[in-house]
Image 1 (spheres, one colour):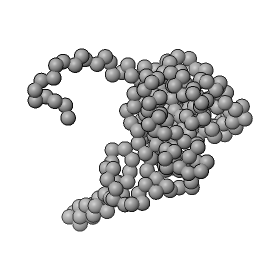
Image 2 (cartoon, rainbow, N blue to C red):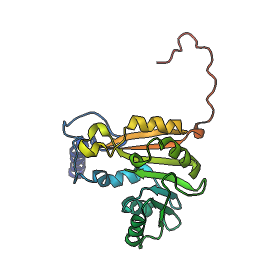
Image 3 (cartoon, rainbow, N blue to C red):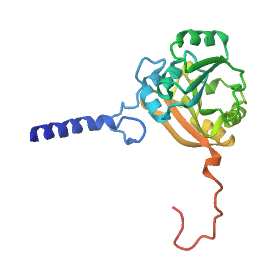
Length: 236
């Protein structure tokens, strides 16, 4: 009995330091100078964090998602596992060839509905989606059109729905890679201009990419008026 307990304690102690490198909810203390070094195959390192991303999205059976710029359908397939038979993934693309390729590739996943969308919107009804998901898509939007697109998504997403954006931080890229990226600060600024409020923004360890999740501003309700500041109650 005691041997088993001792072995369990030993395993926890051994596994403990590794947990510090994990995302969301773990310490940001640097215990290894190489813990943020890029890993993976270099092309889609953020896809290797799919379990973490799915945990962050916390999708439920019956959810409706619009996957904007769905590409080869990788994320659509991942999300379909969580939404069940009653859920829907609207996998949008602006090129018919990509839509056709997804239809063929994801024929075994009926929840995924690939479709051709316009450049300036999703062509989906108002209040029809629980989540708008953009992975490596935001930087492709028309120059100067980001705020308008985010305003459009505010209509498409339900009042309690969310917006999720995955992008590379250009400060961590080089060459062409830094061009296919978007500054997290600028994203947050544009989202707030559009009425979205950030609830989480986090670097995905070892990827040079960040994930940002937003909700609608109205969820926070009106702010109470600030009264006269009393002595001894100054905010820190």
